[in-house]
Every structure is written in structure tokens, then in C-alpha cells.
Image (cartoon, rainbow over all chains, first blue to last red; front, side, top):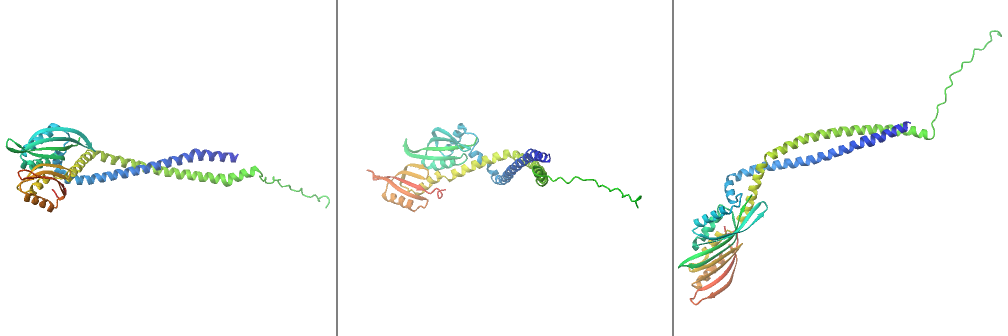
Length: 167
Length: 187
């Protein structure tokens, strides 16, 4: 009788009491470990954000310049307006412009275009310099050819480039 | 002595049953219960208590961690806008830095015009990556030699190759030349 009772108690208590408790304790321990890892990652991210704030303060006075260089939209009329303005400043006139394709370079989008300008040879580098200001443009190819036009020497320049935007 | 010679009655003690000595299975069961069963039960109960208290402490830690994680998540959520702005600026600066590392085209053209002699006329210029190809003509051979000499002496020009040359009827020397520029030095 004693044997039966103790055996039954062992089985009931052991398998239905201790084992589930051990299992749930192990689960909680696992959850706690995961939570600690997650918390450590959050702490790291918060520290990185603090560091980022310090770094951001350094470039905060350049934000407008950066926004001008890479605007949030890829407005073609605006780009055309800017190129015309640069051409005018550089003493050149735009003869044609083609927008070729849009691509995404990670989070940054890019718009490929090619355009031709004509004007005096000596203004070419000034024109290019004015293009390098404000809007960020990557020159992929420049082809300048000098020719006579009505007794004047005119340089026709075709530029293949890319402008960038961050939607 | 005869009349009074009665012996007192003999007192009989209680006849106790001899202790029953368990044997066989019964002996084994009792042995098992006393020596193994009870200690095992005590050990199991102790284990249960230890596990229960450990679990309770883990639960407390988990609750504290949950509060702490929620606080940190809240702090991060509050900074989400700044984080996005920072990431955008970072991406923009990265691409700006890449583009700034490219060859400065206006500087390359300035460099070319600074090297050419007064009588050298440049008819066409082509710039692709670090390569600059020109087609030009000089009215005097000595000017061409001077132009080449300046190119060879210039440290910002890594390679120079004359790819073609011809003397026309007017005595002008037309030539094509390919130059590889050092983008770091041409700024």
C-alpha cells in the first residue's frame, strides 16, 4: 500500500509537477536571455543615436546645401530650370536635353540625362564649374567640339550626367 | 505448614506476539518506501521549491526587463524622425563624397588650357572617367614639342599617348592625344 502510494505520488508529482515547472522555468530563462540581448541592442542603438546627434550638429549648418545638392524629388522641370540658369551664368545656351532613365542607387534615386550646350570655348570650364555647384551632378562623359559658325568659333558640348534625389 | 502451605498463583505475563519479520516482496516494498521513496519524495519537493523560487525570480527579472525594454523602445520611437533624417543625410553625404572623388571636369579642362601653347588650337575634348582625349592642331612644330614637354613634366598627368598626327598643306600639325589624369591631383 505504502509502495503504491509513494510510487503514485512520485509519478504524479514528478511528471505532472516538477517536469512542467522545470520546462516553464527553462522557457522563461530563454525568454529572459532573448530579452536581454534585445535590450542590449536597444541600448547600443540609443548610444548610436546619441553619437549621431553629436555628428549631426556638425553638418546641421550644411543641411540646406545638402538638400539643394540632392533634393527629395526628381522634378525634371526644376532640373531643366537649374541647368538653363547654370548655362546662362556660364555664358552658354542649352540646345537640347534628354532625360534617359531613372535608377535607384540604394535609397538614393538617380536620373540620367544628356544635354548639349553651345557657347564660347573659354566659357566651358566656367559653365562646368557652375554645374558642379548647387545640384549634385555626376559627369559620366563630356564631349566638346569646336566649330566655326558665322565666322565665330563656337564650342558645342554634350554632357552625359546623372542627378540625384532622395524620395 | 500444610493448611497454610498454598502457593500464590503464578502470575502470567501478557503473551506478546513475536515481532513479525517481513520477508519477500513485503520486505522489499518497505525497504523501498523507507530508504528510497521517502528521500526521493523529499528531494523532489526540494527541487520543486527551488525551481519555484528560481522561476519566481526569473519572472520578476522578466517583468523588470519588459518595463526597461518598453522605455527604451519608447525613447527610440520618439527619435524615429531624427533617425530617418540622419540616415537620409548620411546617404546623401555618402553619394556626395563619391561624386567629389570623381575627376573634376572643369579642373581638367583648366589644366589642359594651362598646358597648351598659344598657337595650339584644341578642336575637341572628350572626358570619360579619368581619361581625356583631345584633338588639336599647332601652327608650329616647336609648339607641339613644347606642349608635349609640358604634359610630360606635369605630375597630374599619369599617362599620355599620341594616338595620331598629320601635317596638312598649310604646315599645321594636327594630332590626337589621350591623357590619363590623376583625379587626386586635379582639384
